[in-house]
Image (cartoon, rainbow, N blue to C red):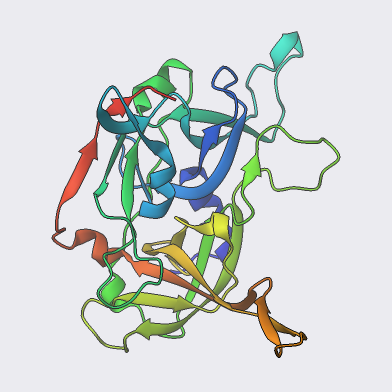
Length: 286
């Protein structure tokens, strides 16, 4: 029996995390969320995009590794019953944030193609946090999302995504109207690429607006909550304005116009035999 969509959203939200960097390495709440990820097992594995995970990689001591001094995955947990700072009692509701250091990244060594095409590798990476650290802080081990079969997805299927389309700074102006937990969007599979009824489609085109921070968001079936893809790109239309000059008009590019469509990597592509996946060890450096 299909659950109401709001119930699906409530079930998925605790497993969706913000992917970002500390603005101040000494302040654990100075996280600037740049993208999205979601938990896929009970041991702290987070699926996101390759191009999101690249922000967490650097070089130190002659080796390449994770910037685990500043790289963070932010969990949003129920705050009810938790002690408030400075002896203000216990919270009666709302959400608390738990920034977790990213300690390991697994992905291919090559960066994603700037303009994705049918020969492109899937834009995917797996980041890992230590869930035993959460337990020591009194935070329950988070649930992971169920991965479905993207071969069964059809054009017209109702789907949702959840993430941080506008990014997020955990510390901001109190008066600012901003998201405090992952944002939900609902839409449909606009197209299965390259065409319907292929065993392992290359990508899904989504009938919904996608913004930069949505990268890495889970694409889930609206009726079951099963994850069938990972958001990775938005299609924009270049907008040029001709400027008059003596030698003839010159076209100048301005802000690209959103088309209202986005793209997701089908989840079955995570199960493909990769060319080479590298596991990057933790390296603390700046």
